[in-house]
Image (cartoon, rainbow, N blue to C red):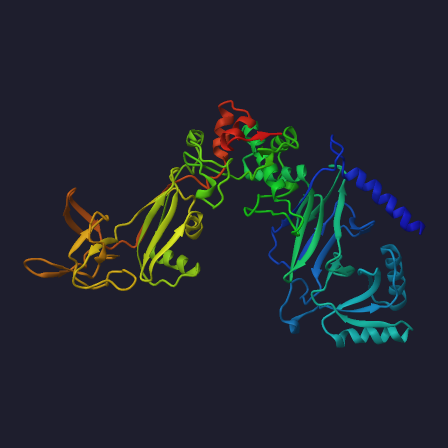
Length: 550
């Protein structure tokens, strides 16, 4: 009993040091970040401490080596997860002794005694009942039975258990198991960095403030960083905005990132955010910069509100000249996410203010099919509707399967465009009036037919016979002969004069402005505003309509 009281007292003192109350007397907010980088193999991860690694288990803490390799209990070669158990060196089978212990230290002491007696390695195994002793990480039951017979010959009883995907095992740097626990238990890993006077740990060679917890979901090992909000921002701001920019721009970014993070906290989920562009780019302690840490400190606790409620503080790189209304990119109209004129972004020198990219027809067809369409031919792309802030609201793909519509942000994501502010140039599609060969049920002109009228627009009155398609391999009837249109260009006379059009284009040229969804704060715009002498709260109030910062 004295040992447990002593451990609880040490834990209480340590937590008091690590979690300093704010000026308001409340504990600082924690956020939970799923750490993906550089997770090539989601079944294992490597922890390295600043000294011994501390494990927290409710009211208990204990210490292990300074390097731990954590794995799901399943099949492995010496280093890597296997789906073919026949090739395994290690596996999920272990021996379980029936004695129950109530602390790690008690179980670990007994494991060392047994190791001296039997010559085999034992380690503490934590379940929701308490600690047991386990031995081995065998690939099959028959291999485990050899050690079982040896143990029983010495008067101990042991059970062979298959813990496939049921446990998480910690190995030391010699690849020896030192601790195992049931996958759903709240075990946290950390260590103490004396230089920073804060708990920190390295995950796959990258350092993070706070603690790490492992969750097993869909047979994947999720590494989740529990970190105090302000320390999380230290690792976010320099990865979302250049640390060399003006301090007022950095402070605006810090306040926006803090607001976004708090709005994402959801205790019904096992983590709040990811460490990448799906949430905010978070790269931990190694990427912190003095200027961005200063920006976080000088805005400590400040968040953005509209009508007393926390906003969703979206931001993007470059607006291209105006930001956008939220409903024109997604679907909900939010009063503080209104499009605003943004000459600051245009004057910022952003390399993304103007952009151009070209797609081959086959690439667009492939992307359409990867998104669940079944297309063989693309005749053209038509922009159907544009917002008051210049972004495309609907685009039509003219295909052999009919018209396929993509709206709002979906088109940008389909093709990987920098923004939805763009125009398209291609000349391999026309509107036809055809009296002799009717269109098919999808209103697509036959690949071989007789063309009676060609126009570049819909300035025609007989819509019943209007179809859309390519004019290549069609026929043109003149007073002298019937000619197949097989060349690479076509000249025709219209009210505008003589036009020469490309009839054999395999490319679609997109010319656009800006980078990102265009909602909320433009980061390059914030940079320019800071250079022009605006303060961070003025920057935020320019991009978020009707807000207060407190």
